[in-house]
Amino acid sequence: MTTTTKQPQTRNWNWSHLQKQAAPYLFVSPFFVLFAVFGLFPIVFSLLLAFSQWDSASGLSTMHWVKPLWSNFQYVLTDPLFATVLKNTFWIAIVSGLPQHLVAIPLAYVLHTQVGRFKHFFTAAFLVPFVTSTVAIALVTTVLFSERNGAVNQLLLWLNNFVLFDPLIPDQTGEGYIQWLFEKEYTKPLVCLLIFWRYFGYNTVLYLTGLQTISNDIYEAAQVDGATRWQQFWHITLPLLRPIAYFTTIGTVVGNLNLFDEVFILFSGPPSGGEEYSAQTIGLYLYNNAFGPNQDMGAAAATSWVLFVIVLLITLITNAVFRRTADPSEA
Image 1 (cartoon, rainbow, N blue to C red):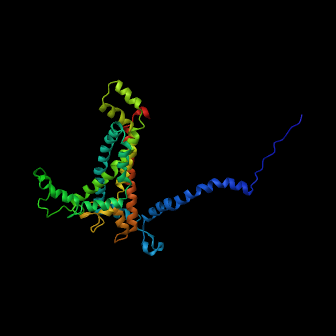
Image 2 (cartoon, helix red, strand yellow):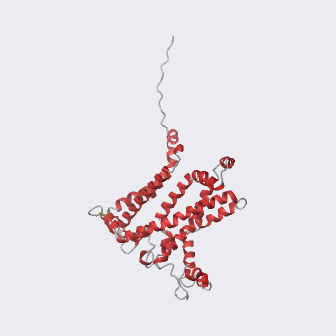
Image 3 (cartoon, helix red, strand yellow):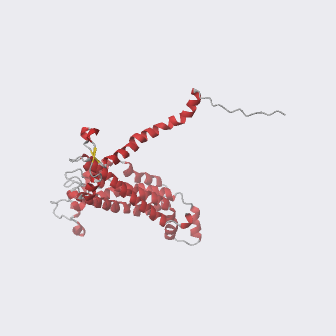
């Protein structure tokens, strides 16, 4: 009887073997390098900057810690202007965000159930405002709502000829045109109108996509049981659209709380943000702290982290609300 002993295998660490082992890491390394440079580094640097004071024009050597360390946060949270912009941001987020979904869901349902041949045409048309440049939209809005020659004021002036619209027209003579881009009574509604027009079509397309994933068998079974159109919409469509509604709501919350482009272009000033800062948002407040006359980078970084905490809290609340309204049988 002969016995054989198992010889230990030795690895041959030649160049070819090393290439095979390193190749996967080499191929994925560009992502991690780019993420580290353009994603992770700005986050860490802004966190350090929130506890520092820095003159960006004089180089990194002028960056030093502030005393006490929470001074920048204390400055932001006690600044009366920050309270104003926080109120403006929530006002615009709610007034422009909520109607988007109240209009988008029924509109998507009508497109899904009533429109056949031209559904793709309407879908593309609704996406046009979303894919158009923010600068172009803001400039067109500026022209439409300009004080003397804007189409909106000219339309209001023409409506003066009808007695029915007399109570609705703020100016009867045409001499005192509405200053949509300056007067504080009109700045926030104008921003809300712009945000609603731009994003309700995008949300409609998302809801329409969600409706197309619902099986027709469910509706056919409901019809056999005698369910009306409204009962089908309320008890079948809305519950099954909950994942899409969660996604769109989170997107609306995060987008509206970070609102900057439209406000910056419409109300670049002076005064920045409209009369008495009536349309200034947290994003524009952050920008003015960093690149305004004070160039206080520490306060700007602190503002960004305060905004991050606000967005995180509201996102968690939204998540909890959707989880509570979920069907326990689906858990």
